[in-house]
View 1 (cartoon, rainbow, N blue to C red):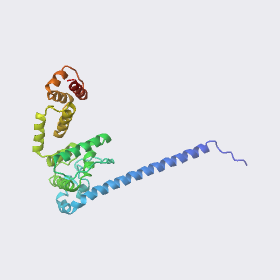
View 2 (tube, rainbow, N blue to C red):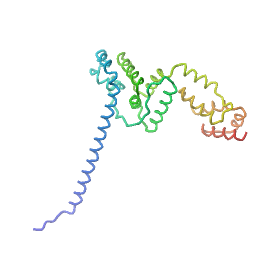
View 3 (cartoon, helix red, strand yellow):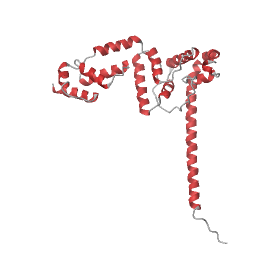
View 4 (cartoon, helix red, strand yellow):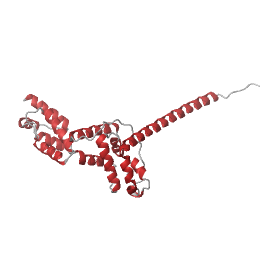
Length: 258
């Protein structure tokens, strides 16, 4: 008897093959994600080992923090607020520069600026920033941070969750008050003088960043113009400008024509 095969059978076989290929791809991606999570966990645990001996002596005192019974679990995830039932987000892979805890405030502020630039480029969520930054701590910075985390836990103070909280802790340790006062005094006295317009602008912008002054663009433009050389300022004020960049270009053009 002659067999009559359905014309849909080849199409069905093709779709089955495609489905199997998609399933293999998904399984491969799941395995890659699992391996990445394991690497991040091993890295975090490796940072903790130098402090584990002293930390375990304090675990009993901390065991009832926030009603959480497993204190060792908290030590593995020190950034999470145990008093909130918040899902832990998956940490993305972002390559950050390391920080060893140098005493020079300029070193820390430069590190912070670079890290924020990378976060913005990769659109990292705020709740992930502190965790990622901590993974790049070395030497004294790593030891100091573990001590701070233990103090937060033992005294039941709010956990460091947001990036702003993290920076506040870092500034309190690595940017002494006298340094900020020195920058504010420099900002108050900053004038263009004999500098080029571009050099003056860069110094002004760098000082504002280090002082962590979040001025509006209008305020920055007013500050920039008020400290220009008087002959340049008189001409610039005759024009209208809509952005800080256009204002700087205008001032540079005026200087080149004087």
